Image (cartoon, rainbow, N blue to C red; front, side):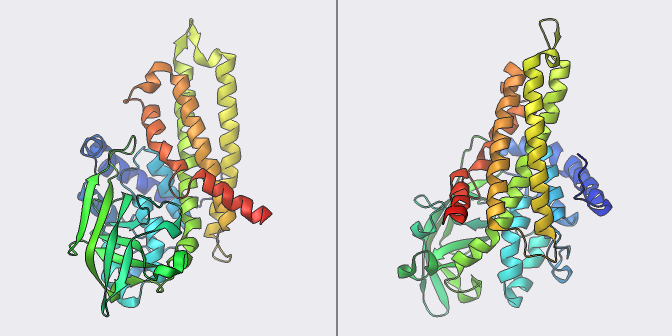
Length: 383
């Protein structure tokens, strides 16, 4: 079915993104995978190309365009290029809204120009060794000392953790408040007591630096409180729908791309004297995946359109949860089935299907696990 989501302007932007990937990302990607981190020059190049801060006001160096369809184009093209290491989606779609919606005028002037130029790489630090989806389990604390906070604690699995110049940290500012006693504090590179642990060794997305972060008596100015005091829970919940939609967009794009690669492969690869595509089992596998992708694409595109509609209220959190768990679980199934159809070649690292198998596995985990998504949906239906 022909997609009706994008205009000519969106497709022109897609061409810009593809050119950027071909010039600034793909020639260096293998080295980044070996290094376990992308170069800072890649972030600066993205800034020069106008790919950072799409929704940030022009006065602060951004694109001034809140249309989420442009973010979707970025997610689709980076997924098709198998280049998740340069985490522009995290920067733009997940962290960006915290800065554009919650920052004071002074904070916007201080942080947003660098955010858009690539000079400031961002991260958000929520997960702890003993607390993932359970916000009440967060132990990182921030004590009020008049004109500053004293921050203590640790975080783990933090994407962009090594490169980040600005980290939004979820910390407990009212110990007795539970999830309602959390605040967002912005920690900047160079603050005394802020240290980074090792660049964690993952099974996929090797070039996407993921780190442990440690805070020991870090003096955080009161001016670095982001949003309302003890308001982190509401702020986090408000932005989760877009985060989960962005993950869903990458999920269905990844599944579709794998299907394209595998369809081409089974037409060319021969077994028992004829192409694999002539075998009924293979045709059935391709037919099933194509149908599942088509149905999922229709729902995700509808979610994108609803979220991008300036006259509406944005995407409902329940629909975002549905899109996230379904699209990412589909991506996981398709990756497994496509690898199987590639046979032994699918297990070789130089084949795109092998990297997609490991790179995409995290999709059902971050942004809220599949199980958490089902719980959200179930509660909305059953109370």
